[in-house]
Image 1 (spheres, chains in turn green, brown):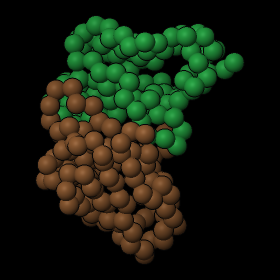
Image 2 (tube, rainbow over the protein chains, first blue to last red):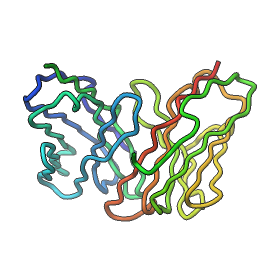
Image 3 (cartoon, rainbow over the protein chains, first blue to last red):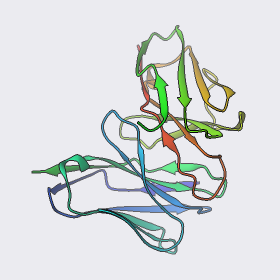
Image 4 (spheres, rainbow over the protein chains, first blue to last red):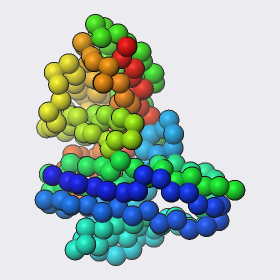
Length: 109
Length: 115
């Protein structure tokens, strides 16, 4: 099974950088996903890591260390529209996704 | 617009009612999923269909009954629900249920309240 931990809430100022950490324990690892979910809306795919290292996509980057069971999502140059919940999800060898409870990020002006 | 639609968006039902949730994907995917999202809790996988065949039932009570008539449509039939079943029910689709980097695309969800 999977055990996925991420902080419940984070607050940051517009233009700043925020790092959301995700730690996981799994019996079989087959990739890690980050999703963004605005209140009342569908989760949308942000990033995917299966090998160690950093994946960069514009203002968002995601890092993975499989040996440490650790990932982070880095949000740079924060904008008000980045206020949302960020979900860490780990895929097992049977391709099922297990999600963390989500981190609510609030961006202040 | 993610290409996955769900109806209704909001549903209030009594414990003795029978209702159905509908999901439709316009992405040409072959796998569809039902998830339950309760407040402050992780998304819980309920059912998986791959090429119209149910491949996963994650110990879901029988008062939830899925139906997948084709790869584009997925239903969740509800009957004799309990108040603790109140949650956001999300549908998702992906190219296949197995595979390398196939991300899942989510619908906007149905907010269900059981009274």
